[in-house]
Image 1 (cartoon, rainbow, N blue to C red):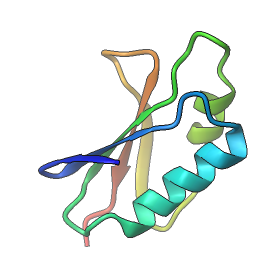
Image 2: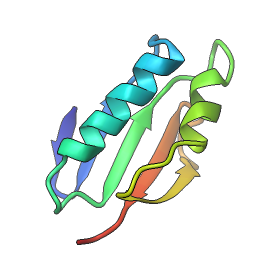
Image 3: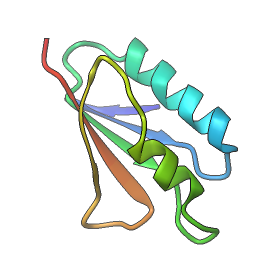
Image 4: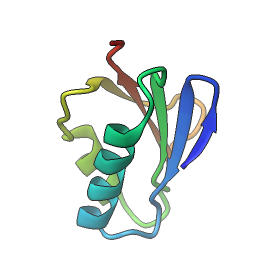
Length: 82
């Protein structure tokens, strides 16, 4: 998990769906309350299994999940401010 100011980046491409979702949820739970944006790198060359699973994720901290307009292999997760 890389961190820049109010953003963290989580790279899960190459992971199985269950592993990826578990890692993302864990990192979101452990992220400081100042984190507002999570960039998830899931890749896109071998299908959309991870991308689709991420879009369906639920967590008390998640405000919105949306595609990255600059990179097909990323999804942006916006977190609630506390």
